[in-house]
Amino acid sequence: MKRSLEHIEYKDDTETLAKFAKALGHPTRIAILKHLESQSCCFTGDLVDVFPLAQSTISQHLKELKNAGLIQGELKPPKIKYCINQENWKIAKSLFQDFFK
Amino acid sequence: MKRSLEHIEYKDDTETLAKFAKALGHPTRIAILKHLESQSCCFTGDLVDVFPLAQSTISQHLKELKNAGLIQGELKPPKIKYCINQENWKIAKSLFQDFFK
DNA sequence: TTTTCTAATCGTAAAATTACGATGGAAGAT
DNA sequence: ATCTTCCATCGTAATTTTACGATTAGAAAA
Image 1: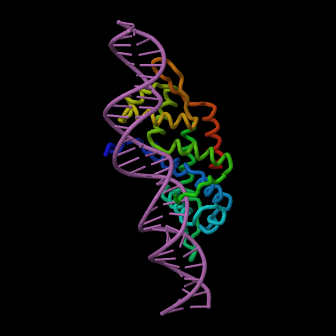
Image 2: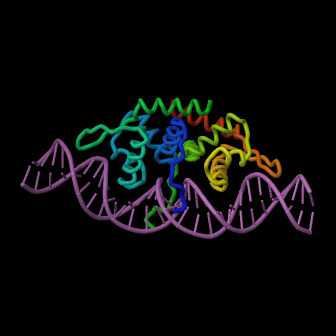
Image 3: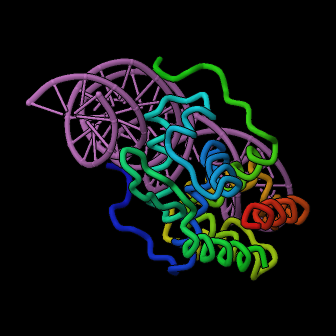
């Protein structure tokens, strides 16, 4: 193992901003979020129809967005409705705003 | 090769925003940019002193930031002075602003 | 010319990301 | 109870990222 084992400690804001930015760092995820913004909410299946990607790939992108806290899923069996996580969205917005002064 | 060969076409803004976000998607790079903002400019060596990372690693992060257009280097032999690329910084700022409405 | 200093690049290795098809699980419909 | 639908997860493979030490390149200084 070449990599140093211990994790560098940054300020919380730095870590959080990087986490949000990383989640935004793929065009498909940007497009998904834009779609969610315009539709307010949607189901996984809707996205599978919109994007020329496998269902599993879309699901993986949704998972990353969810892990970053940018979206949240609501059970509407047998579907799952995804929406922007407004609370974290505001945090992300203000972190990016502050970052760009 | 499992991966589909052709690249999905997104709107320019989507691609550009994802490119900027990806460059911001690592805490070290966020910290470098914050440092550049506060100092206005700095040399690679300054960053090597500040961060507990190898010189080559810092250089690699700088390269990514440069490739994304967020910073630019100016030759001050035998050093290189890095600054924020103000023009692209404004573009990034407005893309993130628009994205977060 | 040789030395010195700075920073990029090379070579390498481990880990993470991105994509796919296949499988599995939960819940409503039959 | 069985079928169907929807979506997450698994298994896999290619690529990219992240980190390191070592080497190289460029320019000033000796």
